[in-house]
Length: 242
Ligand SMILES: Nc1ncnc2c1ncn2[C@@H]1O[C@H](COP(=O)(O)OP(=O)(O)OP(=O)(O)O)[C@@H](O)[C@H]1O
Image 1 (cartoon, rainbow, N blue to C red):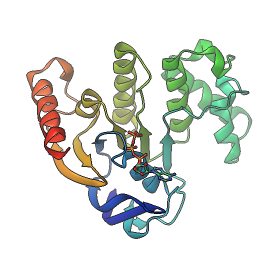
Image 2 (cartoon, rainbow, N blue to C red):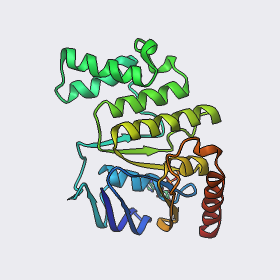
Image 3 (cartoon, rainbow, N blue to C red):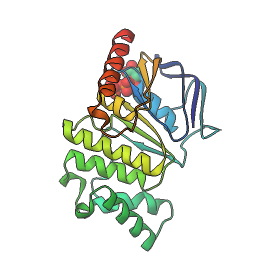
């Protein structure tokens, strides 16, 4: 699904990504983890077609990426909700912008609100929601467009531990039900271990190691010794790289 070869992205003098290579199979999930400033967000923006690389290639679903792409959904750190629109309208807006109308939009928004446990909040404005609820709306607004690739940036960094886990569960359920390819960038070791089938460790603009997670998606994975072991491996690789 995603193939990146020798990617280089620079902001004026600052080189943010250096000769970066990665691949993610269609329908798989990956987590990209590294310390602040290592280039995670830049990588996500490059995958979204929002920043143009100086050199190298990105291919998505077999086609070279040259800008924004219809099938890609992006969820950013600050949720990106429209503050003057209700929860319902935040979900309906992208559908209407793509030409959807009337009953079809209503059905799809209704189904998505129900799937995310947001039925009773459709009339509220984003300012009247908790952080976890905002995150759910942001996820819903992106999933309602049925992306084949979902890109998430530090999805739940501002949330408490339990709400964070619930959001991660929700993302995993959506992935299982819908089969999109998922890229999550995070500096949270548990989030990377839970959501990543493949985990890319990043340091100073490069991928320094790739860990496979054969237990990804298993029931009660967080309670398994293999989850603890994976967290330790990620931690060790992060220490070695930085
Ligand atoms: N718009 C910009 N202009 C100039 N330099 C930038 C810009 N955005 C990012 N950078 C620089 O590029 C490098 C990578 O930044 P990036 O935001 O991708 O890192 P990150 O790993 O996502 O960090 P964080 O975890 O803190 O969000 C940093 O050195 C940063 O200062």
